[in-house]
Amino acid sequence: MDSTQVALVALALGALIGGGLAALVLIALRARDRARVEASLELPDGARAVLQGMDEVAVVVDTSLLIVAASTPAEMFGMLEGYSLPSDELRAVVRSARRTDSADTGSMRLRRGVEQRLVTARASVITPRLTLVVVRDITEHERVEEMRRDFVSNTSHELKTPVGAVTLLAEAIESAADDPEQVRHFAGRLAGEAARLGQLTSRIMNLSRLQSADDLTELRDVSVDAVVASAIESQSITAAGAGITIARGGVRGAYVRGDVQVLTEAIANLVANAVAYSPEGGQVGVGVSAIDGVVEIAVTDRGIGIPESEQQRVFERFYRADQARSRRTGGTGLGLSIVKYAVQRHGGEVELWSRPGRGSTFTVRLPAINAPEGAELELKRRKKKKKKKLKEAREVSRVKGETP
Image 1 (cartoon, rainbow, N blue to C red):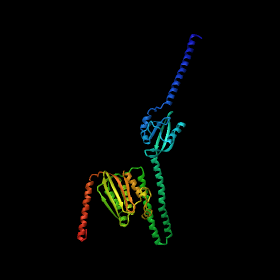
Image 2: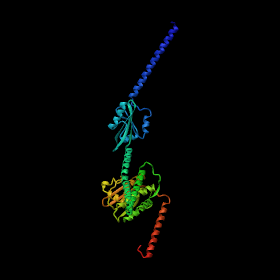
Image 3: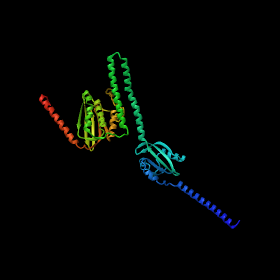
Image 4: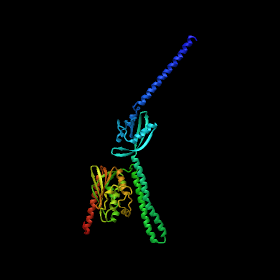
């Protein structure tokens, strides 16, 4: 072998040995980096910024379940950086995810302030020593689902009564086909049950619309005077039939922002209840006040009153404080529920004061707005017109020799 060949062999061996040494060094460096990552508690690049931008509760914990980073909403559940992860159930979800090296989920109740909230938690391993935990509050979702189930169940139950009555009356009419007097009697009762069924269906639809997430679409400046007048007018015939007078008092010219039809129905429901639960010959009062940017509409009766134990339940769907009277008056048990949700959708609240034997007062509070341009002139014009009519009536009475 000549010197050239020896040199080439030596060069090849050197290159091979050098390459091997370089590979060993690279492997060693990678192993060191991997070991550093496994031992490191540093967050991946951008992780903290992502956490700070999240609207959900999210934290990153280390192997000892110590919180090393947290989103802002996490503070509401007592999850703060530097503190241990709260709740044994939450810690169990994290341990399960680390043990299986895959995401794990669980449902539990966590304390938020002074209340317990139903949540779902998902834990995912992001580095050998760090785990991401995302918590979703599903309390409202579960409440809405439960409300929906109750609503369907209650509605089905309530619809059975008028539907069953209509069926029986139809059969009775068929059986009494040869007796015109009986046919007229059953037909009248059938019409009454059909009207009750229609009223119940209409109120169920209205309540469903108010409980939906859709915003009210017919919003405008609403005259409280017009709402109260329409509500009283809608119950005037029923009140007159029972010998009950409806008196309107308080301030004039108040305005709110809302849906005039929804607000009118809400106040009309309160007036209808006051009339239904007032003694014959009694009086129902509707008063309006405006204080500190709030309009108050109070509907008062001197009826049987509501026991304190039942006052929190009267706004529940289909709940009736007096079952016997509700059957006589054809009540659906939905009127006050409609009032509650209608007022809430307008950013207000409804309050009840009642004493058995002394009567009840329902007070609706709504945010007031400034009267639209020209409203004061219209109010003055109406007052002037009212005074003129009163003067004419007195003049007619004087001419006829009657006492004004």
